[in-house]
Length: 387
Ligand SMILES: Cc1cc2nc3c(=O)[nH]c(=O)nc-3n(C[C@H](O)[C@H](O)[C@H](O)COP(=O)(O)O)c2cc1C
Image 1: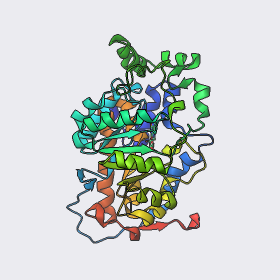
Image 2: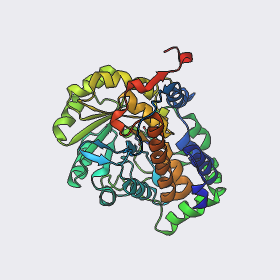
Image 3: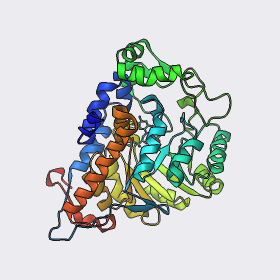
Image 4: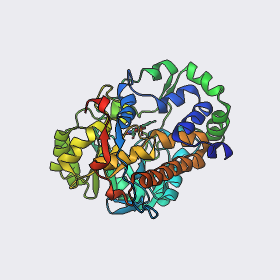
């Protein structure tokens, strides 16, 4: 616990995570596709824009809460879907869900979930969101919709930025391929005692590695199983989005939209929300950083469509910049995973506390009492960036 409390920012949590995880598993979280240009620029683009600080404002009472899709959120941050989080720490999805629920923010569970959505729904209530990749077999899509609907989960997110998997060369080198473990990875696992005893052995002693909880019977095995990227649709089009809109009457959000054209297409299909995202730089390397894509999308479809953004957010002040640019909020992927690796549920809670404290402090320093007061007048592009 002391270790976690001495993590003063998200980068400190990342350092702790690096020390506790097998190297290849840390890379699986931390790294991006190919030359990692988009990974770096997601973060760097946030640093090229400055906050214009207003002064002599009574900021003694600040409220960082906001409302997404009719549900009050304690702060404008949600936990993004990150596949295989349960391998980072024992029962990791439940830890993420509990920490999100305690912090009063949404938790997104992806398609490769080891913990049943039903259990997570009990923890998170209306703040559990479900994300799916469009599956090649459309009947699997209907299976996912049926399970999600039956549980009363209201927010369905569909990822569109990865019709094929991004080129993650480091996984070939480390041997940490999801579902397959090479010799090098095995050696790394044996030489990372905190993870070996705290996660892997705990699974093995409690009945073996977990399985994909909400896949149909016969498709649940993880190691050596049938689940693979080959199952993801590379032929999913706007016609499919329209069909999905008819099939899913509750809240529908498209993730991985990064141009105004596609944002307008999405709005035309009647979706409720967009997550401006490039998969945290894990898919198309060299594509536009999320924060740079944000303004054209906000201008094209907000506020009719709720616009969220993810990619590279590590500081409360980063979150304020996105809000000032017109986003309704920010999703974070790696930050809570670093917390999870560093200290299980307490580590995730620490990551979320860091965001909450930094957001509240930055609001005071920029001269805002509510998140809705933030606007583009609070932003100044760096003169060096040429914008
Ligand atoms: C380990 C890991 C696994 C991820 N798995 C998925 C996934 O299964 N589906 C998806 O749409 N996005 C996935 N993402 C992307 C996140 O949802 C999110 O877009 C990204 O992490 C945001 O960037 P950030 O990590 O810089 O906050 C994953 C990201 C990470 C780091």
